[in-house]
Length: 87
Image: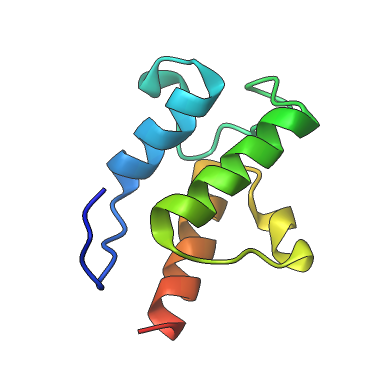
């Protein structure tokens, strides 16, 4: 993590972050793997992913947006829209 004002969203860095939180091999965190159904993410792990995303990317997640955090692709799209609108 760098201390610059611009935050770059990289899909592979996002994959590594999610894999780190879930203690999985990054290869298991495919773009379409469902966090709950395929990766056995429980509510505590989902909360930890959200907190790490907020901290890493400097965004605040609204409760209504959390539904998008079910796959890496959905998470990437949500972050891309949030970062795009904040720049």
